[in-house]
Amino acid sequence: MGEVELSCLAYVKMYLHACLFPRCSVNGLLLSSSPAGGAVCVTDCVPLLHSHLPLAPITQLALTQIDSGKMSPDYRVPPIVMYERKDTRWTLKDKHTIMLRQWEETREIASQLLVSGDHSLLVDFDSHLDDITRDWTNQKLNAKIAELASPANSNV
Image (cartoon, rainbow, N blue to C red; front, side, top):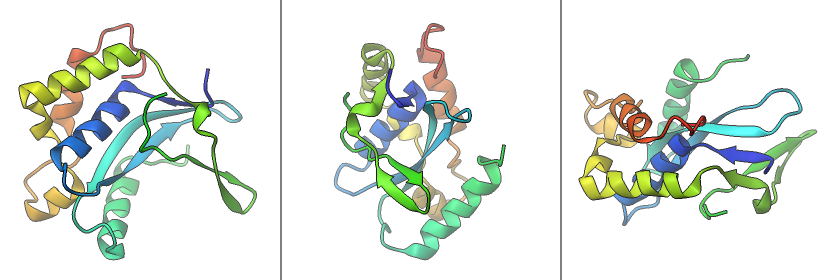
């Protein structure tokens, strides 16, 4: 088992974000849970931007929105770069410590959503700023991914 486990939901949302904006650089935030001293499980992905990547104020606004809604005190995914905080420094984690359970099922779900056109359900924070009626928390897409994932996939 890897030190960092990537859920189906997180992977599919990252994949669809990149597919939705194929000519743009995209970024997002990975949310995780980890018991003290345990492996990190990336449980969700919040797609952020596709056009204003270098603009710090928009990124800060997006992180503030996510912080208030998502955060609380309590081998095959090349675009992911994981960092770990050790003492006062951030260090790059070894790419071999990232694991994706049920890769075939997850890849099939991502492909299915792309072929069906349901990837258009994904709304990043950038698109939300253009039209605030669009849900950047992606509740419809989350439900669709959960519906397609089998009960055996405990990390939807």
